[in-house]
Image 1 (cartoon, rainbow, N blue to C red):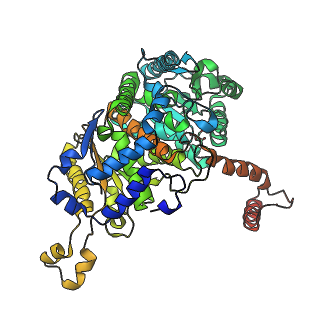
Image 2 (image 1 turned 90 degrees about the vertical axis):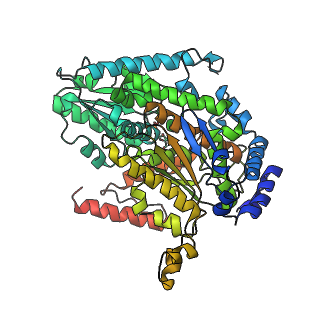
Image 3 (image 1 turned 120 degrees about the vertical axis):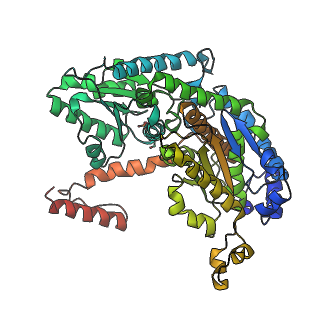
Length: 547
Ligand code: F6P
């Protein structure tokens, strides 16, 4: 618990710290045995998702104090300011309106006195028209062939959401087409993505909010060369490239006709953008109707977050529980384990969402913070993780709260395996919470010397999130659930969850180092001795390979 260094802690914060001292050793076994109504009381529904949060190390008093903390930190007031379009992204002086990307046509959300909802729908309609042309075959490549493969070039928020959503919703996608993603500036990423492709049947979506990101611009230039070399003319670019960006001039300079550009706005953060134009590849894959179902799922969760009372408000609960473990139990990480193979990239998506948003060291006034902010987010699909790192969660010395996500209906035609998958999900939550005592182990006939090794302490907290099936609506609700949980955490910590200055230094240093790697360079290096030696070693290796 890092409370000793908290400088601006409120009474609500100190009350939680005192409460933690009372509850820190109480076992979930006790909490459940003393309270038969616990599972029912500590669960809630919203936007088609069910959250069982009863296997957390909390009591009614914990919740009361967490809600008091939220109140004292002005979480709901800040939430309402976001929905009103106020410039709550303090350091960039911007509104934070990803909620407008999924607002219904007749909604009204203003930024600087202008209703932005019609613009949102104008872009969605254009995206739908384009997606239908590709899917229906009326958009053809330069040689007149139908487009069969879409390659999305983008990184960070311009990649993780589209790739995650494509994988999640693959059963709803056009199986006659293939979708590939290039993010890494390592040329291997591009080479692998275009393996076996016919340029005449391939369309690149260059996705970049700024249209200046080094990785994306480099890969986009490589893609253009790849197309022009294969189709023999610059004129091919027009039929094989479209762009998603806020930077019209940048798109034009790259050589993409802005007629084929799908825009968004500075009030959409990159990691909050998969439901707008950045989702173009998703829309082509699943079709406009399914995409609109996804937006409806996002919107349903927005409305839930905006209107549900705290004790039934899923994002608020998730956010507050994260704060509880992060700041009072000293948990450093949060595991997210989807029991759905299609959600394989969901943890990676959440890493950017959570860690770029809440990995901050100063408050909104720029003052250093004396308490922990965002936890490390990680995870893999269950049941894969069970056979690798769950050992540490069950019997290691670290407290790792986990969100476990499952679906009542199978998506796979091999439905018979679904019982096994779900049995594992429920079993893990049970095992983590209740463990196995030495007496229980011994009663199973285990030799005495082996008992300590086979004891499960339990008392490992989990949230269990259940939905009927993984479909576009559910995915939208699930993503919005985490967006608003991140928001809640950020409001409690009094940080700007919508800037990302922490990515700048590395980018600037890389640009300085690029020319220094040229092996013909022999100008003295002026970095630290370690960096100098590494650059020197690389130069020699380049010389040896004749570059
Ligand atoms: O470097 C971080 C970042 O700015 C992310 O916030 C963003 O999602 C990503 O780079 C890509 O940026 P862009 O969409 O402008 O290419």
